[in-house]
Length: 179
Image (cartoon, rainbow, N blue to C red; front, side, top):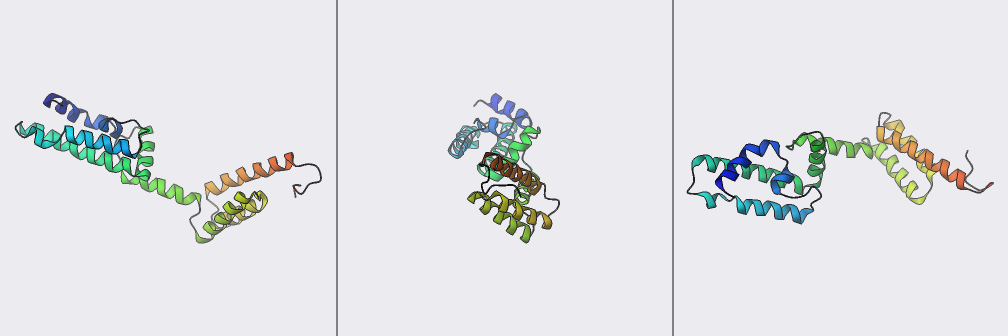
């Protein structure tokens, strides 16, 4: 990369995302991320530009810090998920709050209180076995401990539709009658 290209990249640094900076696709897997990072670090290594002006050295330093930041974010799945969500909202840089929000959303799905978690786990086990009525009962019990949990409410609606489908497809007089 020429000194002029480095200066141009430095000027664009706040307008490009980590994927573009590392020259990788958004669907890149871990090896591609690592390869993009190492390729860019080799191309922009400060030792290659020791004889150049101080402003070029400063630009290389800013780019190197952003490359490191991008690599750290994209190789961690939770951070990457949060970053990708932020990208859809126009945020080009990662903020730790993004990952905290993802973690709290994931935690809320399975419950936040001990009893909510316990009954949700029982619900999942019942659903895996195909006992949707029992799964629904356990989920409703979990909801009594976490009445504001939106994921529990959504899951209840999903289970109720599964029970209705099961009742429609069951032959008349079978064990799948609606109670």
